[in-house]
Length: 88
Image (cartoon, rainbow, N blue to C red; front, side, top):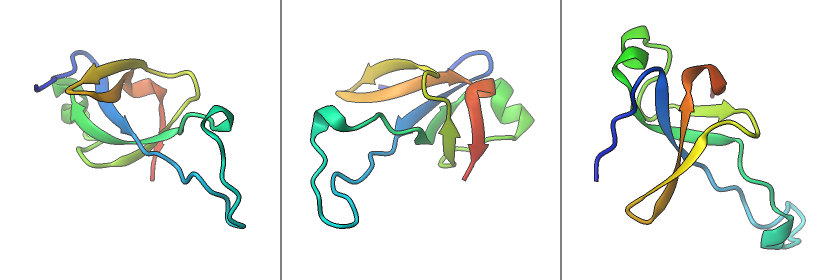
């Protein structure tokens, strides 16, 4: 399924973080926080026109930013361009 964001929105795939610490301690699922970074998978024409974010960019966003969306069994985030804090 293809998804094309409208307005000034982007579609992001969250980057999952490691499940163990540097010392080898395993972090249980209920103690993990949701990642605050992701990879841009789709952008709207307005965002493409501005050229601030491109497909494949790794970005950082706010903790409560975006709306979760499930496509083909994968969870994505749809958010406004203004909610993206920066590109890594």
